[in-house]
Length: 262
Image (cartoon, rainbow, N blue to C red):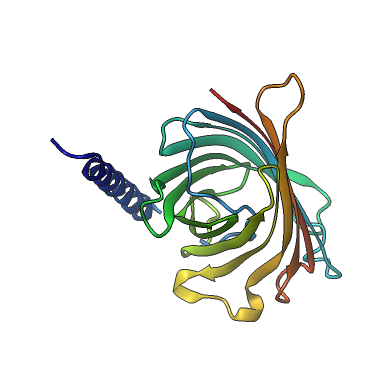
């Protein structure tokens, strides 16, 4: 009879095989992101966790082409198993200079934990997301690896995400975004850190460095409970400074989440 260590390796191997096949299928049927994301994903999944989340960002810049870009997302997700977290929600965008906020997409997001038991050098997972575009907007696939390393109270994360638009009005090529950050947890209720995000352009023809989007800055976050209310509320706010001429000078981002375990 197999020991526990061998069983864990077999399970991890089976997950990796299934996920590799999924990624291959996505790539086979699958542009460059319209804007660089500002969410840093963890590969870890908690079974039975219900999450209701609202997040977004707004930019400020002296150039009208970069000023007052806004993004809003509202979603609900659930840990279906100890390695699969599924989320559904909507996204709204205000393009710079328009003064109008439009519905951009309905999203179905899946976060898959491949290695998360602490037996390897890093915890590793995969994000697979499908976005159904709003009126006049193309559909999108987004996928890529999620990496996390914990040393004491310090947590380091890195995401490398690929995006391809499909349907009418799509861009050509496979776009690349990244996110990276390091957080120090002062307690279970409070953390602070630095994060960076960027968009490199299409894989087959990366933009010149001055035309790429890169932004970085500090974040503060924490969790708290309300008396008589089950679960906990998590909140985060961050300021990101643009590092290139193609990036807005100032970006303020936030996240508010209610989490309940079943």
